Image (cartoon, rainbow, N blue to C red):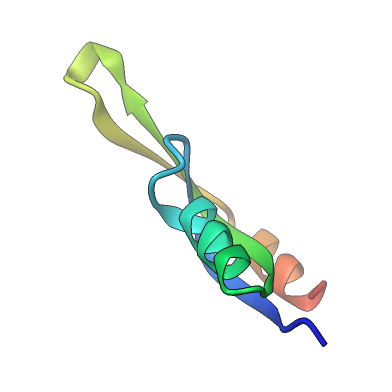
Length: 68
C-alpha cells in the first residue's frame, strides 16, 4: 500500500523549495504526496530577484486541510 503524505508549505515558483520540493521527495520515497498551500513565492526581477510572498488567507488554508 502506498503511503499518503501531506505537506503544509509555500509554493516556490523555482521548484527548488517549498511544496514542490516536498512532493518530489515524497515521490522519490514511493509516497503519494498532497499539499496545502500557505503562500506563493515569486521573485522580483526589478529588485535583484528578491523574494515576494503572497500569503493565502487562513480560512483557505483551513479548507484545504479539511479537504484532505
